[in-house]
Image 1 (tube, rainbow, N blue to C red):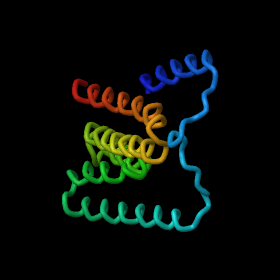
Image 2 (image 1 turned 30 degrees about the vertical axis):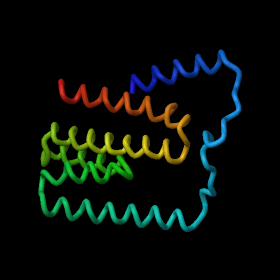
Image 3 (image 1 turned 60 degrees about the vertical axis):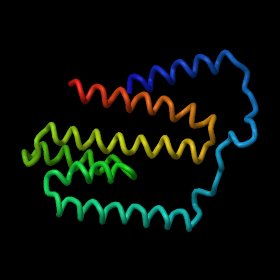
Image 4 (image 1 turned 90 degrees about the vertical axis):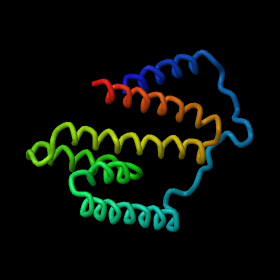
Length: 148
């Protein structure tokens, strides 16, 4: 988070010192109706598929399945993995290190999704603005996890 905060401060200072520039063709994000039914149904189907997949993986792989589940569930949401892992660690049914690793995997997979969405939905300029700092923060998180 510190890396993202520093990038945000740097970009805000840089933006304040320059005049706004009109976006070039293809650089502005597509704006869609957030209340459209078909995209909501697609998202619901994807989320349901992820929940079913995570249930099956946990049944097949047991405790190790939590890590696979965390990576898969993180594609759509991090909150569920964070709550489940912290609750299990608090209850003593899951090692704290394993719970932390599960949350880290969920966060990393969620960050990858955000980077991909910033490129596909926002165009190249938006991907540079959003995706590069997210990739840097994810890389820093991996380094901390490896050497901590």
